[in-house]
Amino acid sequence: MITLHHFLFVSIILFGLGVYAVLTRRNAVMVLMGIELILNAANLNFVAFSRYGGLKLDGQMFALFVIILAAAEAAVALAIILNIYQRFNTINVDDVDTLKE
Amino acid sequence: MEFFSKADLIGTLPLLVVFGCSLLLLLLDALFKDAKKLVFSVGIIGMLTAIGCSLYTFPLSATAFSDMVLVGGYASFFNILFLTIGIIVFLLSYSYLEKQHYHLKEFYTLIVISISGMMLMASSADLIIIFLGIEIMSVCFYVLAGYKRIKVEGNEAALKYFLLGAFATGFLLYGIALIYGTMGTTNLIRISQNFDAFSHPLYLAGWGLLLIGFSFKIAAVPFHMWAPDVYEGSLTTVTALMSTGGKAAAFSSFILAFSIPLSMHNEKLMMVIAILSAASMLIGNVFGLAQKNIKRMLAYSSIAHAGYMLVGLASGTKLGMDGIIFYLISYSLTNLGAFGIISIFEKENGGNLSYEDYAGLGSRKPILAALLSLCMFSLVGIPPFAGFIGKYYLFASAVQSNLTWLAIIGVMTSLVSTYYYLRIVVYMYFRESQQSELIFVPSLALASVVLVSIGIFIFGIFPSLILNVIQNLL
Image (cartoon, rainbow over all chains, first blue to last red; front, side, top):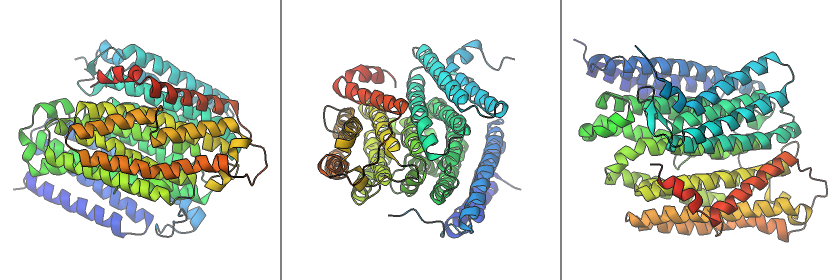
């Protein structure tokens, strides 16, 4: 039988993988995917809590908002990354480092 | 079944006006090809109307839309602050964008939308509204940070701001999810009524993640790495908006969310916030010393000021919260003035940003130099300017809550900061100028800077004018 704890366990693994991707990946698109993983880990939590905690539909509604905002963020992010590629000819975040004293 | 009442609509009138205004601006943007003036003036009229509505809703004290949004008092007060910041940024931007050749009308629309996000953050009675407000504001900021899209530094600022900002949002959201799971609700009022689950590890982890998310947004150490690069790479008026409105909005919802655990006098939480605060004051001020670029210096200064304001939050008392709100006002006015003058003085291609460039400004442009000196004095916290009263309240609250060591760090680091703030004044008055070209001073921008400076003076000499209002907010 699948319980709340299974969902929380999967969610925390997703969260950890997301943080790992953001911290170790150098490709900007990969970092963006890491961020998406973190957001979806939170979504999974919301839906699982809402379903197993008998908490009406608040969690599902929250998850919907997050999905919409993640889409908006991805649109802005890809536009920024496209611009970066045009200026720097790379999307490696380590190479994008001209602002220093 | 009724989903909302007439009272809800009247109470949230300022928000609705700004939302409506931003939609109207999008429409005007699409309908007319070259309508910068139109978009600019409609935006200003919209924000002035919203200020009027905020004054009207100020005496109310309620929640709207099933306890989702706060109405009146605290929310209206912050709405007026954000809208004032928005109007001043509008006035500063018009001539500045013209000079920098980035004058597109979308700029104004984005600012109005980000202001609506800030207003939502200060009006939140539910964690979902905090999240929505932060996202509306941040997504606009990501775009605004990259507004210099032909330049390398603009793109870099946007990328860094986006990656770190979105990462922080992820933490914030995961924290909210854990609080929702353990408390069964995201409503701040209901959470405050039910402390039973307070010791649950998931619940504590939730508040911890929320704290990390907010620390990113206010640029507190160790989550400050983005601030110097983003402040330097963005257009100066955008930096003005991010460092004043963005910070004030983050603090307004920070106070709303954390007044619950802090009201329990949770020693551990107070200690964590005190350490964040001490680290921000130390690192911000020490790194500020080494900067050559004025915008970068003000970025480290903004990190240090986040530290000062966290002192008030760490104290957990009402005096501390009132101090933060007063400090936010004085800091916002001062930074708007400083960035305003920098934007007037900045050259077409982004030059004139180092200390050396300010040499001799005192004789070349006496009014600008005097106003910039006034802003610097207020940032240091020298009486009779507003910055002094703010610092006084914050440090007094720390002493009251047995955090005297924090107040001592605050005073010591303020002394350190005197060096880099007054260095600019020394350059302006005691160094010979290397340049001889004329500086064009646009009247709109100058008027707004003068207005801001008068504000710094009045709130510094008669702080009770605004303190009496602040004391009845929370």
